[in-house]
Length: 325
Image 1 (tube, rainbow, N blue to C red):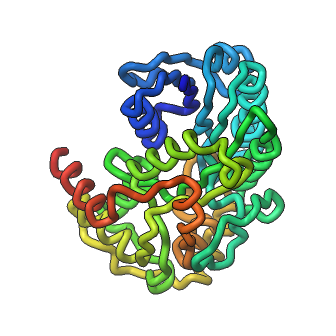
Image 2 (cartoon, rainbow, N blue to C red):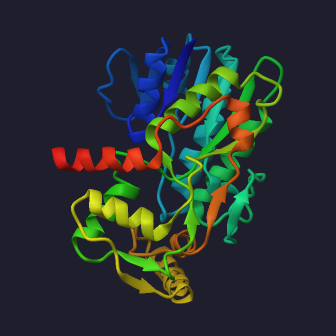
């Protein structure tokens, strides 16, 4: 199997590339900047550029489409260009190149409309109800991908939930930074149960999806993938903070106040066109103040996959990584 991985430079992308290489796949990566990945063919370019994408996918038989514009804020045109048009460009190039397997890396946010999720299944992507430009654009992209499934071109969407691990600059990096500065707070009582996913498990799940996306119970479907070990927000925040050598959070902000403040900051950032991250958004307040964990039985059965790294082991690895400096 010759596999194109778009966006192979970030935490999850680089882990997917390593997993595929370990499985003996012939891997090409496409991203805007050099990744330094060993043993792969590298093409530099933008996923919305048909010429670059065609060059990257030439000779490949499978695609893992990871590349995306990821942010909690920012103007719609860039989300639409990268996440929607970029996905359409990669799909078109893949079909023209004779690719027969396509894994769309999506997000649980595509079907999250702000209500608690307790043992939830993967609901259909909902661009109209999705919270924020990122979620809306990823919902549109997932629908484009799944609608492209047809005989000879099998498509599956995988929604990894809150991927983290050593080197993570999103969840782990931000929590560690705020904890060290004494600015890490909990929304509500911090007792909302949330699912997360250790990065090695995420990479293995995506590799399994690539191997199995042609099967009848997998193709054309979307699956949420997590460690299947819901923990409270307070525990997740606290263990990441301690791993980073900081104190766990003790300060709390009432949920309604946090959501209202986040909504106000959303409006201010949109009005001024700022692209830096605000201290809080309405979506983030909802994520931190409401439960969101998922029934993993469908994904594990369809992908023939189970996490190899439990959360406790993951936190221990994280502490070792921070200690190594």
